[in-house]
Amino acid sequence: MQEDLAAEQKARATYEKLIDLCRDNPDVLDPLRYLREREIVHFQRFGEALRGVQDKLAEKKYYMNNNNC
Image (spheres, rainbow, N blue to C red):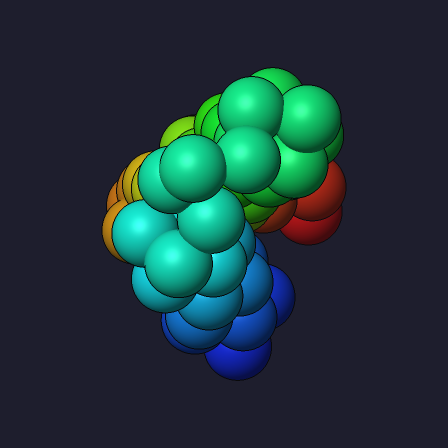
């Protein structure tokens, strides 16, 4: 998941650079802004998923033996 987070950040940075290069072309800016926003949302969702997995792994597990032998 950390590789996915890094990929989303890299894609976001790429879109930001393209946006900076295309400031004078509004027809190109809107799709690039949409794609950049999509990468931000993906990054947030991967981050939430990673935190959920980390929280589950950090939970202490107690097992009880119910054998009455």
